[in-house]
Amino acid sequence: MTERKIHEPVRAMSEHVLGRIGVHAGDEMCTPGLHLHLAPMLFDPDGHVSFGVLGMFLDLASTQPEGLSLDRPFVHGDLSVQRLARPRGQVLRIRGSAARVGRRTAVVEIELVDEHDVLVAYSTQHLVFFGSPLSRARAGRSEFQRAFMARFTGRCTLDAPLVDVLDVRPGPARAGARSWAMPITPGSRNGFGGLHGGAATALVDAAVAGALADAASAPARTVAASLRYLTPGMVGPFRADPTILGRDGDQATVRVAVVDEGSDDLLVILAEARAAIA
Image 1 (cartoon, rainbow, N blue to C red):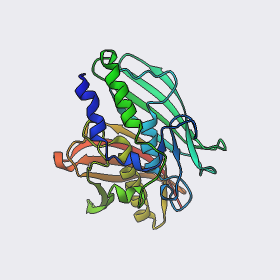
Image 2: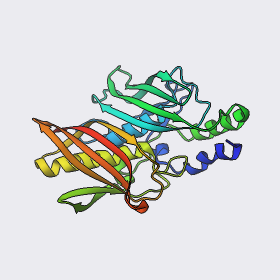
Image 3: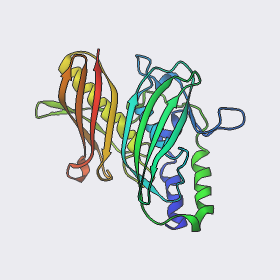
Image 4: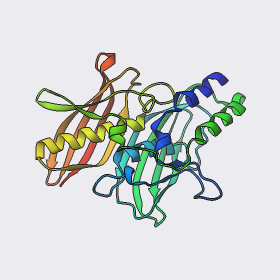
C-alpha cells in the first residue's frame, strides 16, 4: 500500500458523522483513551443510547483492543451489537481484547461501560486483513492516525437524531411489507468510499423497529443485531428489507437484507436482529 493510499481515508472521512457524535481521543484533562461523551441527541426516548450511535462507536472501537496490532489495512467481515443497559453516567469507555489474531483475520471483543461501570453494550467483530504490512510506511500511517483522531474532540454537534442526520426513512411497500432506505453521503462513507458499516446499523435498527411497529401496532426496540458484510456497498441508495422470522411474547427475531439499489439491488449486508416489543 502506498503512502498516498494511506492518506486517502483522512480526506474521504473528513465529513463523516463519526466526528459529530461526541467521540473523544482523550487527553490529560479528560478520560484517557478513545471514549464517547454522551449528549441528549444520542439517546432514544426510552433512555437507551441510540442503536446506530452504539454501532458507529463500536465499529471505530475495533482498532483499540489490547493485543491487536493493526499494521495492515482491514475491513469488517461482521459486527454484532448487544444493547444491554441504559447508562447512568456521561461517558462511555472501551474495554476490549483480541480473542484471536491470525495472519488473515482477527476476532475482537469490546465492552462499552460508563463511569459507574454499567455495561451498556457488548460487541464481537470479525476483521479481515488485506494488502501488505505497513512497516515501510509507518511515518505516513502515524500521520494518518493523528489526523484522523484529531477530529474527535468530544463535542456532539448533531442537530437531530442520528437516523435523521443519515436520512434514514421509510420506503415504499414491497411484497406487502415496508422497506427502509438511506442514501450514501460524505457523512456515511467509509475510508474506501463505500457504505460505513457502523452507519449501516442505524438503517438496520430503523427497519427492525419499523417492521415490528407495523406488525404489532406497538413501539419496538432493537436489543441486538449481527451484521454480515457480504460485499462493499459503493453506489446507493441502500434499501433495507425486513422479514419478521418469529415472535415469542414481547421478543421477536427479524432478518434484514440490505441491498445497493444503484448496483442492481446487490445484496451487501445480511443481518439478524432481536427486538423487544412494548
